[in-house]
Structure formats: structure tokens, C-alpha cells
Length: 176
Image (cartoon, rainbow, N blue to C red; front, side, top):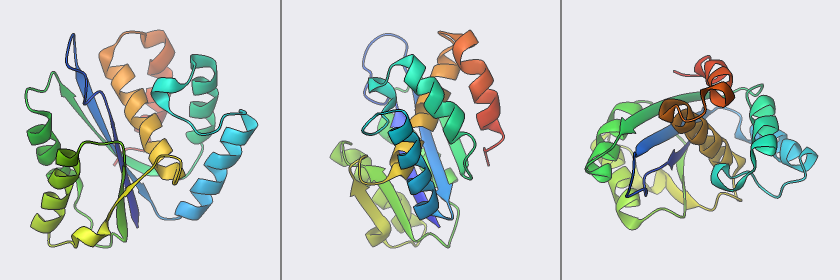
């Protein structure tokens, strides 16, 4: 089993801040990678990134990706005082599987983020060698995590419910 972890909103320092963490579980990563790459090619985008994609493309990506076979866990933290502590608490409850081959996180994260995940893996008697920091362009599973985290954060922020509610309801069927 491969695990992909991405979040949305962890670096926001002002205004209302919802931090969403997506934990994606894939049993057949190669098949999902291929299908996501096919979706990106069909949409004529290099690689999907929630914050950098316009809504019409984002919506088409969501529709297609929600047809794929994956499971997800989502954590929503509203206005976190200490994002590192919250991340540690959430992941210690999320990482429960024993048959994990690798855990992938987006490489654009601060060092403390990686250190927190390594601590959690050690606490669960899992090798920290299983943790791989990767670029989002390397694995479509990271882009899938980005989409799930972005959609969840947008849904819980309630800034545009007519846009996000129907897709989040479909995503809920994938949640563990």
C-alpha cells in the first residue's frame, strides 16, 4: 500500500484559516498514476495543482478523478494555533496501517513537517525510510492528495457552497 499526504492552508497566517490534510491510500498506484496523467493530458494541463488551476479545469479534473479507485482520510483543523502539533495529532490517528510500502509527501513542505511525519512513523514502529519527499510532478498520487485537500478545505470554508458541495458529497463516498 502506498500513502500520499498533502494539505491545504497550512501556511496561511492571516484571516480565517482552515487547514485540510488529505491522506490518500492507493493499492494500485501505477494504474491511478496513468489515469490521472491521461486526465491531465485530456485537459491540456502539465500537472494539476489546486491553487494554480482555474475553476473550469479544476471542476473537470474533480469530475474525472472522483471516478477513480482510491480511499482517503481527511482532517480539518479550523484556525490552528500550532499547525505542527495539530499535524502530529492528526497523523498519529490516520496512520494505522501496517502494510505500508511507502509514504510520500510533497517536497515543498517545511522541514518541521517532514520531521513530524518521521516521528509519527517511528512511534508506530515503521521505518522512516518509508517516507519519501517528492515533487508533485513525480507522482500523480500527490496531485490526487492536493485535489482532495483543496476540495475539502474549500467545502469546509463555505466560501462558495454551490460550487463545492456536490463534489464533496461524492468525495465522502471515498472516505475511510
